[in-house]
Length: 153
Image 1 (cartoon, rainbow, N blue to C red):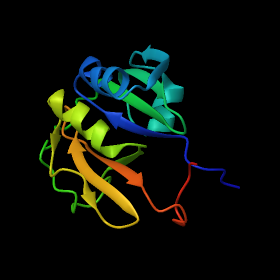
Image 2 (image 1 turned 135 degrees about the horizontal axis):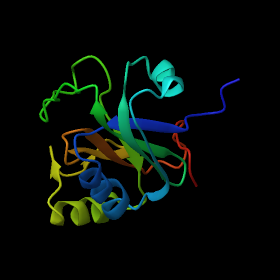
Image 3 (image 1 turned 45 degrees about the vertical axis):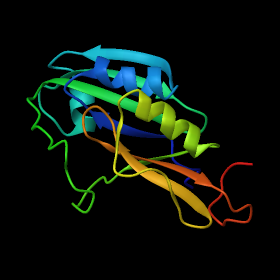
């Protein structure tokens, strides 16, 4: 039986840069860090790769972990940092916040790019931004106390 989501994983060309964003700016806590070299068969089998080598960091938030990977091998394809969210595959990660205007202002002041200021959709206020690699994240504040997808109180 599925209990819920545990983590999302992001591959990056610069793990320290993304740590500066997710750990230092957003407040996720680093709870584990590891690395492996080519020839680590058990990891290669799970990942479906050959001769992979990478650094991995697990970050913990209130109800979700974020796993960051920086692969040395095999050489990853680069990502378009302006990749449209309509493309197939991962579109975004959503962070539930208690004061979207304050979080938005703090991140904007830190240089984070957003598509628009938070918009009011009635039951929720939301906006999309991008991390330093161009991965899209959403900030949402659920304002309706009876929203069916409300997870926190």
